[in-house]
Length: 235
Image 1 (cartoon, one colour):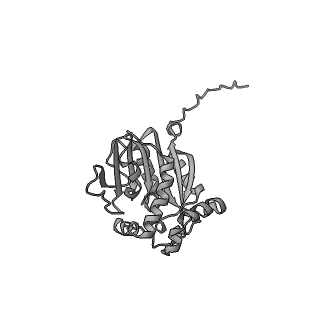
Image 2: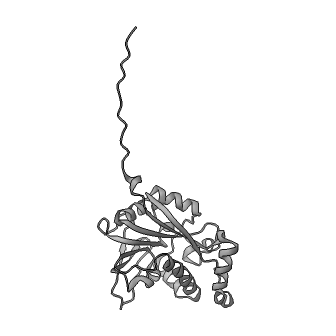
Image 3: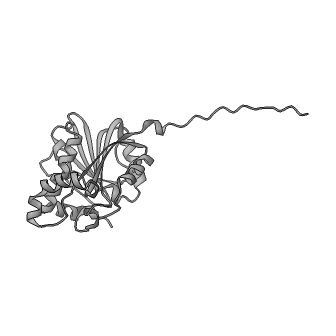
């Protein structure tokens, strides 16, 4: 089942959603601290997470797959938002330096085709950040949040999926050790939960963050070895 854009927007308007967004956004900003002059694409339901990069990026686009719905920037934002078909992105080849994939891969109708489109529009020296619900985490099993919809992944599964899409994993990170509850006392202690979970139970993170680059050499065809004809002399 897929969480639509309206339901996801309602989640991020709650205190729990705001805390989850801030925790995850802090980890994303650590991965890409400076995108000055770069073209950034957020794919899935990424608009809440693009805020740290909107002002410095040369171009910042939030693209939401049609099966998720329509997600828009605030009216005063100079950036772009659009609805797309996940297997046919309306962008030319090699046009983005950075692509953030969040609330997208786990709900994709065809994850492989989505990754092939990401590969096509990402520059050869570009970088991809894929945020996916962790199969072992609590958030993947709570349908009251958008992280509890679609297909969760273990780190190994997401690595193999990216490899099949001709990406090479460069770095992994985690976030959301906070339990997916609405209790104010728990939300106030979010930094403690994050720090403690990262040290004590790293496998129980709510989401995994995987940074990958295009594996250009894997996309090159393998040259056939020359065959030599060996003639045997009849006795």
